[in-house]
Length: 185
Image 1 (cartoon, rainbow, N blue to C red):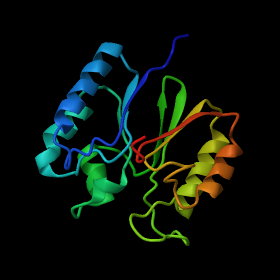
Image 2: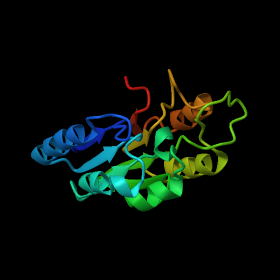
Image 3: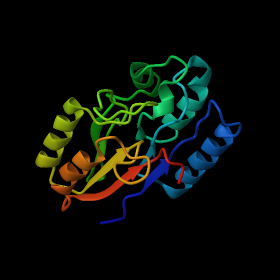
Image 4: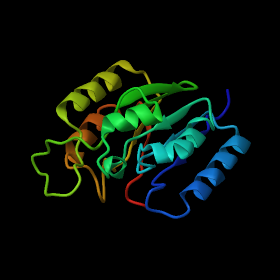
């Protein structure tokens, strides 16, 4: 009966960019004014370090439904995905949630195990997560949004982009959007 509004920010890179707090404040202020139904950061946000607790809390306390995606740089400096889960207060590295009747599937494109990995950061959706994604797409009626840090197609895509595109293609009538960060485009 009304549009669903989701505020999106990505690649804040707080730990390496001088203006991370100012950019986050601008985002939070705009989302408060727009009365968004949820806010999501699509990865490369801030190390899950104690020194970043205030910034992470600023995001998490800015809305009743703050959502996170783990980016490839969020585990730099010796941090782990588990550190991200604890600091950001998210349930799992990939998960499903509902936003006003829209199903959001959050993926973790940082899995190891790609048979075509050519070096650098992992960029892959592993078997366990792929099974979960297929189950979600089969049981959910739609509409569905798929969120990831790494693109699922095109430039900078995950190593198994063709496979995931086939999976998503089988549910194309349910999926209204696939959104990502990472490429800074």
